[in-house]
Length: 65
Image 1 (cartoon, helix red, strand yellow):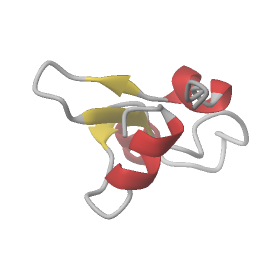
Image 2 (cartoon, helix red, strand yellow):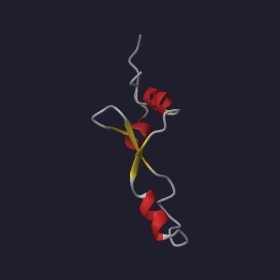
Image 3 (cartoon, rainbow, N blue to C red):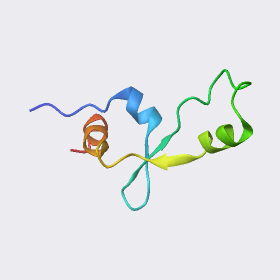
């Protein structure tokens, strides 16, 4: 059986934490920033973890399953 290939778009977007969780960035922080409030932009700039419902799908894309 051939090796599983990692999805190249996913490997650029997700990183693993030391405990095995998957980190991601927020969307909507790349352009049209003038109409967004400072608070909204500040909160979009931080990273967060992938939701529990999406973890299995992301792990498949990263060839971890």
